[in-house]
Length: 379
Image (cartoon, rainbow, N blue to C red; front, side, top):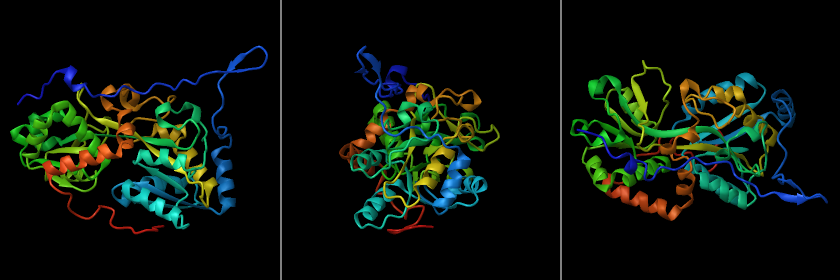
């Protein structure tokens, strides 16, 4: 079946990329010279080697609570950081962001804080924690080169990576019928052949599905539900189902447009059709036991070398050219970069979306993919 829709309709809810924030000038001196007031701390001037030395002197430990689906997703970060800074005892605890954030709130309320740094998908928490004085303002080296959409101007938080969700397919199973757009997921040929993250269990997948509903209409959502979608907990599960050959088409997962053409699973973005993107925010907690090690980590993650090596080719920095001929993520209007933070901030609307999709796809079933980690995980 044809997946074509009007470009005007497809972009009806696409978010325009955020532009640079404009600060009103203040008048200083007798001549009334205009000068923009400096917000927050100064940008870091220490090198990675100097920060490393200071972090070792501080105690040589770092605990991070990071949003994710399974602990192995942090293996690359663990290996890369430890290879460069072997004297730092790094712990990265992976769990769903919606569990980590309330876990941190409870630890703060009971004076039992474990992590030094948090990096989560729940963008609204960073705004709240800043207002509550829970975050340590800090501007890593290169802060001025980070796109305005990816940083708090006072240094309360900064995004360390770009993440995007769209649709994907198993190249071997779809053959000559590869879906050119996510709209084509309702083609009868894909009945029983679709895997997805539960949209009402993961807020990023929820936002993506909300874009589909706004762009294609609720009739399309009903037709998708009638396809017998296999839904699971964890945004990694659709790719797993496609890699194993269980399903042909996947929805609600991350990927890369620059992945090798030989990859079995092709992650795709269609011109004129919605996908969603955001910056995974990170912040040092004001009560961190190892703030210098946390600063070292942020500087390492935001270094030009690390940003150039991003798996999906996109960087949060304006001075890093995306790989593979991609445009910067903020130039994709159908990527809805500015829409996700607004969506996450309206928790009442989020709950309405969740319950509505539960009516279409059924209640969430199964244990969370990272397991149940309790109140104070530290390994």
